[in-house]
Length: 110
Image 1 (cartoon, rainbow, N blue to C red):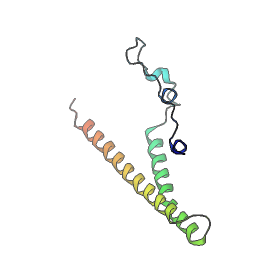
Image 2 (image 1 turned 90 degrees about the vertical axis):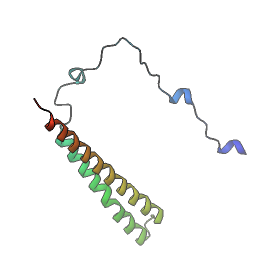
Image 3 (image 1 turned 90 degrees about the horizontal axis):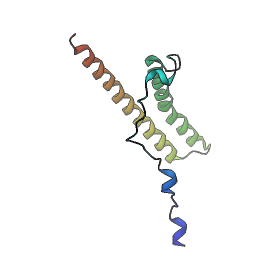
Image 4 (image 1 turned 30 degrees about the horizontal axis):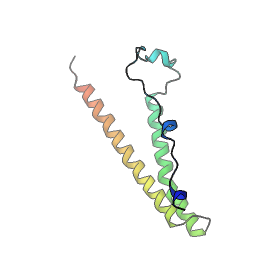
């Protein structure tokens, strides 16, 4: 009975082998593909803002579903609210880090 609740983990299969001391050449940006395949900085931040916006709007929909009895409960509402809060915090931190990096680049004297 006790063995039913013990998770069965296959650590050997789950852990990927890392090769730190290889003689392979380093990965260069040219080998990753053309510049059209790499997303632009503006596109990345636009997607970030859109994802944060969708995450912020999600708790309202879940709360409406909970009030109407469409399968959601208060736990789902709280989870959606915490996800929204966390995504806003992450987006704020990312924005401040980008601004700090920009200020450091501007401060470099040529």
